Length: 113
Image (cartoon, rainbow, N blue to C red; front, side, top):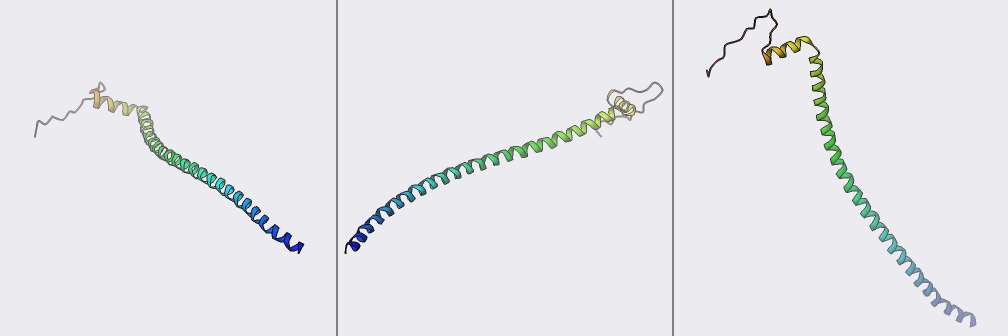
């Protein structure tokens, strides 16, 4: 019977080991839960930052397109200003300047008709 008595003593020791294992498991699960909460909050914060920067990027790209359009218009105007005929047209329209041998034809102004 000595053998059987020892086995009965070992059974309570397993419950003590199980209590320790349960405690370790709880601590592990608590640590994992805290880690997952921290990781989730970090991901959420980064997602919000990415969305804000994406909106800013979209605004900057639209501004860039507008600036490129203005740039293209100005470069075309610079090319035109290199042409003497275009300069002559501007002088005639804006300033009323004509070459010495040219007689301007000015249409009569209509008054309120």
